[in-house]
Structure formats: C-alpha cells, structure tokens
Image (cartoon, rainbow, N blue to C red):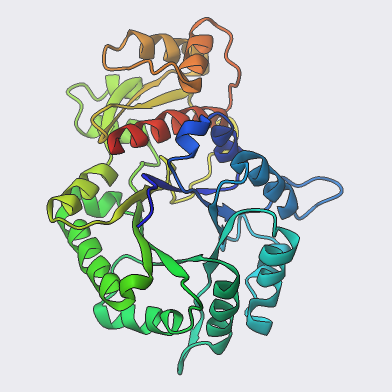
Length: 363
C-alpha cells in the first residue's frame, strides 16, 4: 500500500490545470493525481486540439512526481490523436509508443484499457499488460464500483496473470456521479464499494498496491440544491449551503474497517453540463472543514458580481482563510480587483481550496 493520501481524478482542461499550478509542492507530494487526457483548445495550427500541449503542461506540474495517465472517451474532449491511442491494434501499440518512447522521461503510471469480446478479455489487453509491467512497477485500471465477485474475477484475473516481475496494480473503483442515489441512501453506495473492494483484494492479493474509491456529488446547480433545504428559498438564490457525499461515504467505508484509499473528482460535476456564454451568474463556492458541506455566494453581474460574492464569503464566519491561492483570489475580488471573471476561473479557485481541504481531512 502506498503513502498517498488523496487520488483526485481530473480532465486536462484549462480550469483543472490552472488549479494544479497553485497547489503547493508539499501537498502535491501527498497525492497521486489521475489525469484524463483531453484535447487542448483549438488553434489555427491545431484545429483538433493538440494533446501534446496538455502533456507539456502535465510535465511542468508534476516535476518528476508519478501520476496515472488515462484517456478521455468523452466526445466533447476527444480528438483523432486520443482515438488512435485507444486503439487496441498491436497490443495498444500507439499507447505503448506514447508512454514508453515519446514521454518516457515522465513518471507515468499507465492506465490499462480493458476491451472484451464474447471470449473474454482481448489478447491485446493481456499483451499490453505483459509488456507494460516489464517496464513499470505500477499499472492502473479503472473499473465500475458495483461489480460482482465473478465480474471482478473476469476482468482482473487475466490482468493479474500477465503481470511481470514484481509489478502491482492500482485499482480505481469509479461510481461516477452519485448525488441522486446518495440523496436517498449513502449506505447502499458505501456497501457496494466495500463488496467490490473485498473481491478485488481477494483476486489480486499481493499484486494489489492500492484500491481507490472515486465518485462525485457536486451538483450542476448549487443554487437549486441550496434552495431545497433553505428556510427562505428566495435567499438561496444568492447564498446558501448544500451537502456533498464523498466524505460521508468514505467515512462509512472506514467504519467497517476497510482500507480503501480516498479519491474523487475534486469538486467537479462530472455530468458535464455545459454553461452557455452569458447565462451564468457569478458564484464563489467554498468547502467547509467538516468535509461534507459547501457554502456559496451568488450575485448577478448587475448586483455586485464577484466583488459582492467575495465580500459576502469573507463576512461568513464559517469561511476559514487558509492563506492559500484561493484565499488570495477571494481577497482580490473583494477589493474590486478579481484576477478572473469567468466561471472556469472560479472553478479553479474552488478546486484549489477543496483539494487542500481533502488533504487536511486525511491528516
């Protein structure tokens, strides 16, 4: 088992990468990020968005630290380069070249992409595992969190049997967006994580480095969530609070004595609901120290905008100034000099504060 305290999974979009630019080295050393590679912004020279620009950014952020590299299968963030890397041809030949030749100087933990047919796991997958594990001590695999023991064995046994030397697996158990289910009953989710974790541990035994829970419950509309339990629904349009469930589920798992590692989507709503230009209301979100609550301040551009949001946040006695980048950005906005005024910029601010708060919870 590794010493990493936190496994955030992020897409390599501008907001997420901007956040990571401002996380301290001491905090980066305590976590193992999972980068889901996406295309970069389109330019005249790269109309499809070049993934190598994203890799260059990851290199600058990691400074030799290890990270898990995955590929986005979301059509909105993919391009022909990514599709090529996902091809199983030649035992994932293009993925091999990408990791072991083009970016061999980076400390990449490769993701195993599991393809199957009626006969089971494809031979190309097994051959990739055999080759990759001869080069790397650690590989990663991402599986649904709700597999039966037979399904766990189906997917992991062929991979386990093709691991070379003393290489091990990091298994990411991904529940995706769980807000609606968690609203009803968090125990069903935590129990499913526990059952799948136990099957993974039994199957892999000493080949298991870490098993990690992954999920997200950050809502697409914080104001709508805040209004659900507000005494004054009209006030919830401007400020309020809402519950997130990742930490609640993790604590339920720990109470059963299960040694799973904590990971999440770093306060990103992974339903991938796009905000159209001009429709957003300026908003600042902050995670509270309890690990399960967010507060928000939300004021329209003709009603104070980010400056009013920031001042209201500072006035809120629940807000803790941790002297980090997010706190600096809130102070600048309160003074009328916000560094950024786009939703994406303030997602970066929210993420930086949130990620630091997760590490505090694990300390």
